[in-house]
Length: 361
Image (tube, rainbow, N blue to C red; front, side, top):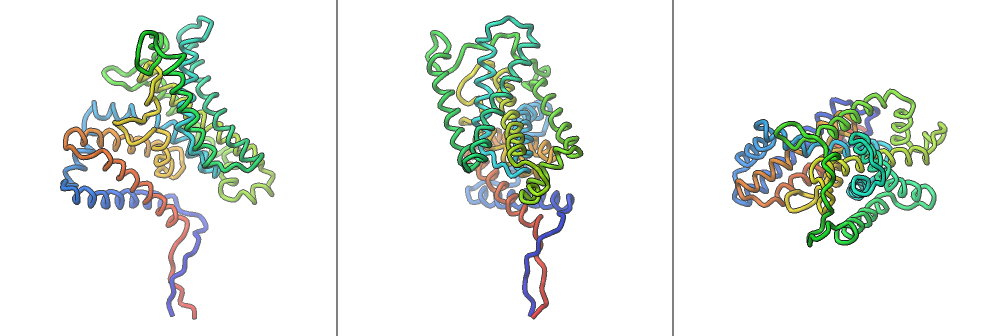
C-alpha cells in the first residue's frame, strides 16, 4: 500500500530554495488577486500599476531605493540573527533607540567637530545604542532563560515610549506645539543624489554590510554562526560558545537597525519625531517589522536579503501609489505582504523536507 512520507533533505539546494521563494511570491500574489477581485478591483491592472509605480521610471526607482536603505540595513541584521536562531523581533525599538541617540549627538554633543566627524559619531553612537539595546535580551536569554521573542518585542514599547517622552517633553522644539525636536544642524544632514531623497552615505554603508556578510561566510565566525544555527547541541560539543554567538549576532542585528535609525533622522526627516521608524498612515508598519519579511524572503542570506529589500520597498512605494491612484485600501497591501510571509514560511518547510511515496507494507 502506498503511503506518503515526509523526509528531511540532507542539504537543501540553493536553486531549490530560490525556486520555492519565487513560487511563494507567485502564490501570495495569486491569493492577493482573489482578495482584490472580491473587492471589485481588476487584479492585473492593480499589479501593473503597483509595479509601474515602484520600478517604472527614474523617480519611482529613486523612491524605491530610498525605502530600500532602512530595509536593507535591518534585513541584513535580522538575516544573520535568524541564521543563528536568535529571534530578534525588536528591530523597531532598536531602530528608534539608534535614531534617538544619533539625534542626541547632533543636537547636544558638547564639542565642536568637523562635519564628517560629527556624522561618523552619530552613526557610531546609533550602532552602539541599537546593538546594546538588543544585547540586553541576548544576555537575559542566556542568564535567566528569557524568551528572545518576548524580550525583544516588549523592548519595542520601551523605545517608543522613550521617543514620545522626549519629543513631547525635554527635546521638543521650543515654541512649537508639535511632537518633534529642533531641526538638525545642516552640517550633519546627509547629502542626497541630485533630484532624489536617496541619502547615499547610508546606502554605501548598506552595500558595504552586504559585501562584508558575503565574505563572512568564509571565516571562522561565519562557520560558527551557521553550525550554531543548524544544530546548537553539536555546536556546543564543538566548543562553540552559545553566549558568544547570541551576543554577537544580536549586537550586529541591533546595531544595523540603529544605523538605519540614524540614516532616517539625518537623511530624511532632519529631526526626531514620531514615525521615524517608518510607521504611520502611509506604510504598513515600521521598517523593523517589515524587514522580517525581507530576511525570510532572502532566505537569511546577504545577497538574497539585499534583493528582497529592494523588492519589498517597491511593493511599499507602489502600494502607496495604487492607494492614491486607484483608491484601494492600503490594508490590501498589508494583506499581500502578510500573504508573502505566510507563503515563505510554508516554503521554508518544503525546502527542508520532501514528500515521497513509500511502497512498504
